[in-house]
Length: 353
Image (cartoon, rainbow, N blue to C red; front, top):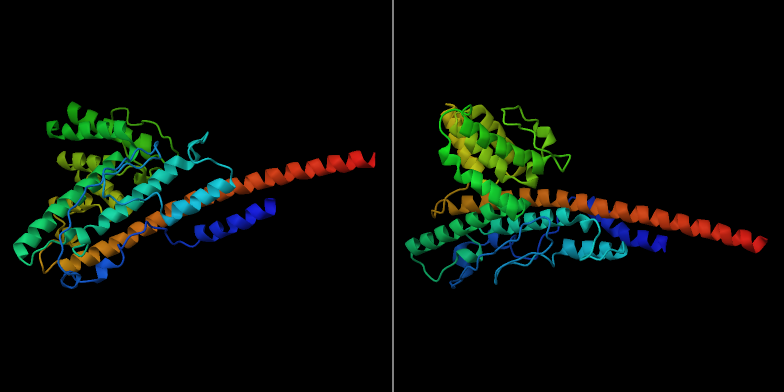
């Protein structure tokens, strides 16, 4: 039995070390190579996706017409490993890696949304050759996609935490003057507490700000767990003229998500305010290209490049989860083998006597 289990898991050991991400079944890689003019004319309406991003809930809610991620190759593979391990996916004492699974699902959704920013994506086609109509349609689709990305990022840690963050964001307009003011300092502390609590490498973290300014050790944070509190904090720091700190936070955000459109825009603005025109130009070039006919090829390349980066992140998450499950199976196999061996020894002793 132990040998058969190890034989089954050997396939997944090779998967976990390959560095290749499993991605949901779609045409995201194929359409980007085809020009709009070659795709024909047809009418396609958009049905926005409603994501359930609570990491404590393994369900995936979506409106009719949204992509399905539960049947991706990776999760079919993980389901097989769960069965080998004797786990029931709906009834786990320790949530059986629910957090990791949902983080992977979120990244899968993120890749799909990134693909929709490509001018060649099917949602951007309309039954018209009039450039003004095409431009208007693409602009609407861009706004909807960016709104869905923002909702995905805000909801990474569930509805209650998203509500807290949006409350802080709504109060940003009340912050005036320097960060030393009571309103600004309270705002800063509350936001930093969210980051420490949910983005600590040694999760779960604890609130540490204690209502005061502090130097943050970015090595102890994993902003990929929840990116938006850091983005909001960077906005707060910029508004209170703490530009160097705002830039440092934004650099960390972009190291985690180079396609974060809001952070790219923030970086350009902060560099301009720091009178660093060369850096501002560099970040402007890295931003999401426009939708004019002259920019569409560049925009398609931008989308493909950032989808590739997102898939690398996805592969890392998938490898981490696969390694954890395989390690758990190996422990189970060793325990089972030990028990069987002890039983055989007792049996032999009894027979001898």
